[in-house]
Length: 631
Image (cartoon, rainbow, N blue to C red):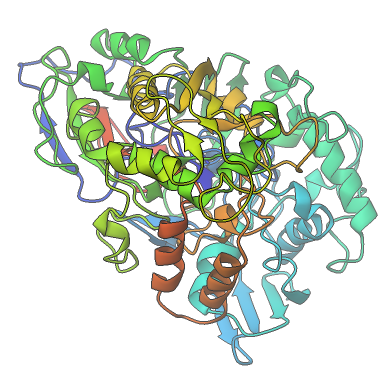
């Protein structure tokens, strides 16, 4: 589901830097130095470090790709607004019905009818969480699917014939055709976040349901739902009519009564544009675990160096160890080595996230004199580019063993039943000579450490390919997220590697939120489609598409398909996995070979947890559950 956060969530950064959620095969080791008691004087408070330059910047759960990140969803919105189904149990990404708003869905009618029974949860304004709140979300999805980041053409809501509420606690979904129940639960029902009737308004101070989107039959009020969507988006700071405008609403989040109606374990008491966030426990939370820690603070940092200094000074309770401050290599990717001796009050934890790491090329880019998009569409170029990425070396030298490779669209770690042997075989192992030869035999004059140019334009053997002009240069811009020393080193090293084949990459930095906001799908030929490559730092964590069938990020027209990759065979392979419970091998092996993105090494978590903090549990999904913690 989300943009993954690199610690190096999710589309969010990868766990390498964002060590707030540690993954499978969790291990911990204490510091090599002795320490005094680390228990804070205020045991009602826990302070959590945000990844560098990655503050949350959106509060409305219905959002486009530019806001679809771990920092906004898993580590911010989820504390206040619970999804219909909660995923993550121990060190697995499996559905957790114990923490879900509903019981397990019941499939019938040849897997074309799904019945969902809600549990007894309440909103903080005293009203019950009802079937109407689910239909409110579905009505908005029906009206505004193009603005929902996890939308895939043909999937939810396109595959529905009706959604009904026979009573206040039951929702029935009727489908056009049979589906794979596992896929529908893990990737479709997982997208739904019930919304309170108090949000069904189009003006400040409006009465609940006055917007006309919630208390109406499914699919009958698109105009009204669009008006509600526009109002709530603007309250979050996003104007659909002016999507490039700055978000000037961040400072209003904590005071706005709309966002105080919550069904999660916490509610917001402070929020500012710098990323200082404070939550207080929600006394009316209906879940099975009530918070004993009454206040949670998210603490922002512009760099990972500043965050490490805060750890040394005891100014955060849950943080991460930047790669440059790792003083001993990992035993293996899931088992930490010795902790930094300056962090005696913390346990170092390490593990995997349910994610793949990559960055997109924009297949519709008008950059490089109009040649970037056509060049990226050439499989031989993508093969040459990927073959110059030395993942094993970067994991060893930059991540110091705290990392695993990404070779395809399905996570290979933690070990799971989905990853194929072909994907794990590294079909594009590092090979400079092979990369150079691929370019030469396709009509390029290769200039190592210079700029390679197309000297044989046209299609067919020995030519550069369709749409590529004579004299076109392999010269591209790549914007990446600032704040992480490890990511900067990775980008610098990869730039040098690509230069060996005369691929001249100009690097630029911007904040995580800026990079993510720029790297969105766009139409070929449009003025806004000039971006070429972008690396927000961590690829994709599979949530809310917990089953890694890839439709949200690789299907044609999908809302989170950043680079607008399109391939009919891939679309058919994905569809086969959604209709029937079949292995993912055909899909993943084809896409591994096709390289829809540039696969990158995936750092594992290096989290620092205060030794006196009890109940902290790992999460392959980078979620925060401070209601389970205590001092």
